[in-house]
Image: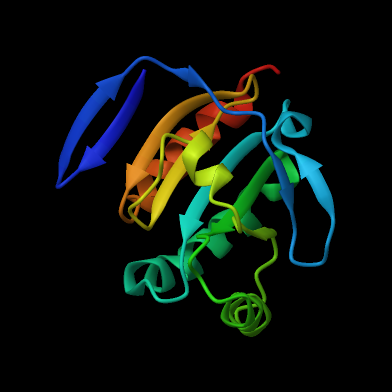
Length: 155
């Protein structure tokens, strides 16, 4: 079951498979999301000009640090309209420890349901299913509890 938080209201949907898409990191490394199967993955669509995105980023970083050793990965997907120089600056200044990409063509946003609003975050289980979608900043206490449960499940 997928829950979408919109204006404080959760909308429940059936789980769907996360799209298999190719992404290029800021340092030029190319990977496909399908290669992350077996891990729990947080895909966070953000922009440097998005105040809520910048507000939640320290919590995204801390969540990654707490759970990465247990098989958790984070992908920060900067929107196609964002300035590449600013993305690199934020990634460097904030010492983002996870995968950072710019969705230059908008293909990643389109593949994840035509993401328009930032931050938009998707939580993917070990089997590649989207199990949670957050529009706006997640409740990180509840996210931690969900991550504990998902990481304890077999791959």
